[in-house]
Amino acid sequence: MATLWSKGTKAEDAVENFTVGNDRILDMRLARYDVLGSKAHIAMLESIGLLSSAELAVLTEGLDRILAEIEAGNFVLGDDVEDIHSQVELLLTERLGEVGKKIHSGRSRNDQVLVDVKLFLRDEVRQVRDEVLELFDTLQDLSEKHKDVLLPGYTHAQIAMPSSFGLWFGAYAEALVDDMQMLRGAWKVVDCNPLGSAAGYGSSFPLDRQMTTDLLGFGTLNYNVVGAQLSRGKSERAVASALGAIALTLNKFASDCCMYMCPNYGFIKFPDSLTTGSSIMPHKKNPDVWEIMRGNCNRILACENEISMLCSNMPHGYHREYQLLKDILFPVLELMHKCLSMAKYMLDNIMVNDHILDAPIYEYLFTVEEVNRRALKGMPFRDAYKSVGIEVNEGRFHYVPAAGGDKKIGDLKVSDLNHVSLGSMGNLCTDRIAAKMRSAAEF
Image (cartoon, rainbow, N blue to C red):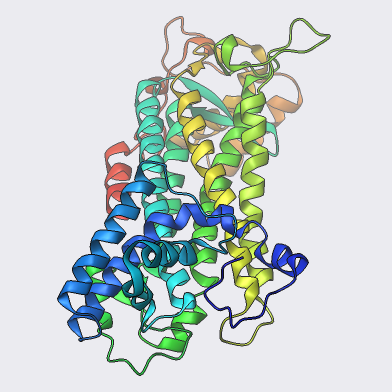
């Protein structure tokens, strides 16, 4: 296998296979970023006199050709090439001659990998941001569309108080705002340029690190060259933590959907084409999409801990374990994209039951409404609470809607109840939550 670090000896095949692992496959995700990082690096090398303007032009043209091959899907790693960095340099040397060997001046594979991964993660974080925004908008639209439809609220899995579909959809929309704040934090960790830190102790070449920072569009640098290497694992963990926050929100929503689809609840349903059946029970319409999503979100949640465990117990500087970070994080990023896309697709086809409260079991949903009504008429709250509790225990409680007329509980809407404080079901604050999200997503 062709390696940049070869000194004339050859590692045994078993050692190479074990240490390289899936790295060559995963490196294909980094191909375009390796070229972009190299273009910025050689532009800087020319500015400090390590390349002539003619050499820069030739190398840039060569890198642009490789980038075009990558974008067209025609780029491959040779069977005897260790990684993406080796392949790019070897291609340049094959095609351009000795000038291709100058591309690595002033850098190490350590900072080359770091900058590739950070450029890759910046794009991934922005893609996740955009997918979260699409899901957020869908949830807010559903919240407004169904804001007047009552939904039983549960605590301890017991019937509790009136809620609404507006509250339910809107709650998960605002939960995504918190997740976006974490994603924004991950972006700030990732958006630092490590290029120029070389193997972790800098270079005696007069590298212009601010120039490569500007060329690559990073917000700032990892200034300390040792500190730049300490960001190995930290960037990945920050992204994994943000993904975990999103996954926790999706996990809870998926659990709700599994429960609400159950005929015992019957709160929501989806077209038959989005459910699955049983091999023996012809009536079944299973929530397999939401169950698989719930399971995958648990896998995403585990990613941060796996990264933490991998990166523990190592002194500063580079260690080969860091290569495994790609094995851990890259598949999880794919899972996140799939879960966000599928969640939106399912919500685009959700149907809500607007007559849930026709069932007599939901009369006790309004005990607090009755307590409050009595308190508003002058009865001390604790006395009102006790009197309603006695009626419930004796089977005498019967809620008469304050809306009056012949309205039954099953006919009630949110507008019939006096829930108007900020964030309650009669005052969802949709616009304010949207403003919070837009601010959080500015990165």
